[in-house]
Length: 245
Image (cartoon, rainbow, N blue to C red; front, side, top):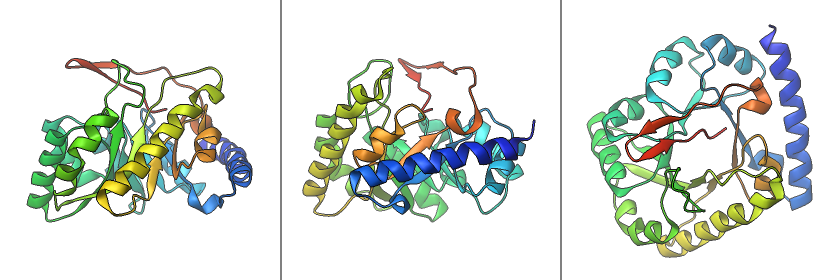
């Protein structure tokens, strides 16, 4: 398979749709970053995607990323978008530029501890379970607001915004209220912090245009760039490792 040709064609379609969504919402396309969800794909596919101009890649599992990243171009930027267990934090801090899935104060404190040891600051997004789905990780909005001062007090964490994986819907318009809720929650968080939170990571292959219209600055795209793949679901403790695209 000519991965580069396939990805290049898919990316051109995605970029045209981003431009159109931004035009509808009075935004600039440069305000939206595509996070290419490369989970389950080998380094050769990532290299093909990089040749097409993609620079930010999202991985779900620390173990997979640990094996893959060294085989990929060094200039790429890697985000962890899947659930992070505390026993994997040390590797996550070493591997990823950003952790998008901070979903508890306990996890944040462990990132703080490992970042202190590594002598670095870690940009993070706070993951919110906007619909309160039992099968997904993420803060309940009320708990996030309650813990925000403690999260903000961790000096090695740079809180840059919020992330969500909303309920699936065949009609993307049905997801719009969840994106709007995350945007409103960001405003509430900014009011509490007295500082801006620049990023909203929301929107995947089936609904990214709606997410952009509602303010997304990062869209996590896998299937629409690389083609369909078998869904991956793994039981972790009392929850489920969700698949952000």
